[in-house]
Image (cartoon, one colour):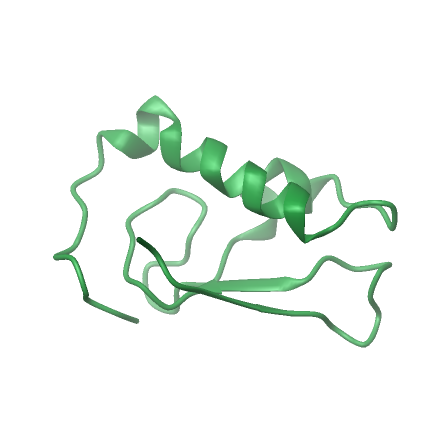
Length: 82
């Protein structure tokens, strides 16, 4: 299991929610120092529009986790956090 923090900016829904992993994870779309999701690397945040919601972001992150590129990355010990 992974823990995330999701917060909506005041400019919502024009801007996507801020998403940060609390659980340490190695993914090409997550900043390795802070756990923040890099918007330009996640389709749902990169192509954000005001008709989208958190569900699209979570689905997009799940697809990124399942991608071959990310599945090959060595993951931190379970329970480690940023």
